[in-house]
Image (cartoon, rainbow, N blue to C red):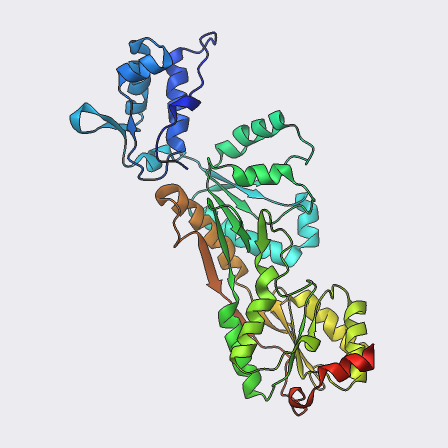
Length: 408
């Protein structure tokens, strides 16, 4: 959004059947929509605007009259004409719509991400309904769309919305439509559980701090000192989309490791298992640790899916959870009746709900450093996969070089 009207962008056609004053009124209306909240922008006088656009002064007068009638303009000091102070409220559509950009066909999206996606969507739908806002699922055009058609999509679909919520990316190597939407500044946008690289896009996500602290305190109370880590990512700082955004989970392991260190828990590199995106890979690494008799007493996993695969791999190696070793997840997608996994729970519903509130706040008051990124606290949910430590700490006697020699 901008602080002043850009008169260079006004597009008028003297051959169009639409009267020039109506064209000018619509173009100025569009420019006013692009202004930052409380911009207090001043407009050119009727005479100066007429000269700039080579129009009859009566045309400019009638265009300004239309905008005054709509309450978008007000008279300032010294006969100046200004954008009304409550223009954002006046611009709000009587029946607003927000768009939810999904990374794939809706039915596939729900099938592939049933637990997590629906928990976000429930929060979005419920909060939007409370505010009398309609929601629209937005499917982005294919990556090979022409520039002309993409601009038409932005103006005809996105331009009519009062805000956009992003639920993820489409896994394309070069997703130009998504990038162009990110670059589009005419409507406020919010990314769920990720850090966008664009300063005009907000973000709402879970904050691992509260859940991590609760976990570390519980581990110390139950005698755990040696903790391992299992992640499908390649490193604690693995960012899969450095050009446009990166997901919160990309830096989740780093945040957890820092918390482990603050609480004096041992998590050396040999117990940090990366690139483990299936049960077989997890089992292979665990088997080597088991052969060296150097397993930690508990594994923290980057998400619940990885935690369940870790539990299955441990069972295949003859180890019982939590009798022999404990496992903790992250997400909380499987929490509820009958759940046995100890996990750090994300506030999915609250994240979805807050994303709607942020869109309204950006529209009415604008974005600043305080409201651009909102983090909501996680919590620890105890299940049967975490028990007291049954072995003495190993880290104090562990020799990583010997471990490497044994397994090379």
